[in-house]
Image (cartoon, rainbow, N blue to C red):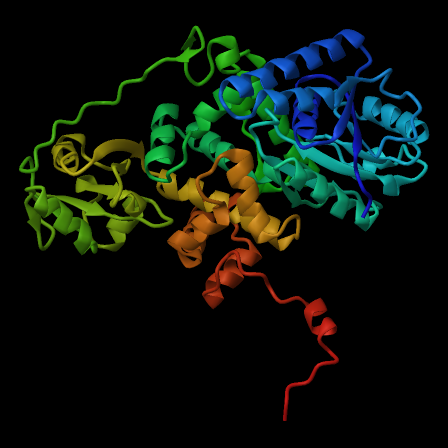
Length: 511
């Protein structure tokens, strides 16, 4: 494994200066370069400000700060000849031709250096075609802001020399970040696994299942994510997020699991990009998101008798809140059903209940702080509305339209299913898939771990039900998911492969 001491950063923008800062902090000699010398000066000034701020906050001493800044220097030019540079990290504009041109020059100018590209979307293998020796290039995808986002995707191309991966991992670990090795595929890992949440949320919005604020509330309060999908899209900006959706979708030859939404395309064209333009799925005033008040439901446990179909735990919850819960259906009561992977109206019909007097409750929501109620198209508004006062007694209430499955189930199942597809294709290990989602997307737990917490069998049941109802291949259950569900295995469990037997073919069990 090559020893790395001196690093050249090519590109002094937000990413380049962030990489330079963490590398110098870790003890590397760092040369900052850019085609515009003014950008280098601005970058070094910015890093100096950040380092001094660390001193003010007690994160490092004045002596340590001085040592960090002493390890930084401006370079003559991005492609200046040098035989003492061990690693070059290219962090220029995300343009294939520009990156290839610079990498080709760097190959000659820095003959002993490992070449790395901080690309978020371009294939390392394609970038390497510009080199005489494509084995010298590896992907190092940092996330912005680099000092805070402690994840790096290490991406070997098809021709990258294996030892470069080990060297890259050691560099990443030395700067205090977590490195995950990812196959050279569209979107790598984080931008790939992160497509499930926004695309399913946009699909729900296009079906008028619920408003953006309600979908965000469900994702936060039922699924436990820190931000809802529409909050996240507004924060990132549709001008950034939508092209990523299109790129990953096209890169996987229009896999329905990754299908973008026409709604996002239309809103991008209209300039409704999010916080940066003052309006997206929410409105913004001075960068602050508008507050959308929730509908008020006055709790009245005695408003109407209810019948709870096959959910004794929830029946007990309502009784403890003072509700009148009947043991059998009644024409004077509202029936509550708990659909899994199907519309509430279908479950009502199958149970012999009157769809006009039935509401659906997402079973994923019954133990949390928000209860999600699906309203069948056949529900009698006058007859069923009093039940909302009963349901508002134990928790906050969100109403959605009935659909192929409840909102939280659809979002969770698509997130887990896509993560399983990534595991099956070997793009990353199950552990790294979860780690990447947590560190790169801010998920409180990885999608595979989340699938384990509710059960692979339940996720498969949800997907099979939606697929059967809609016929949409977007919801076909992945083989990894189905196999692990059938066998009762953790979704994070590694599958035995033929190569495992080949490695052990010389061993024999004792007689």
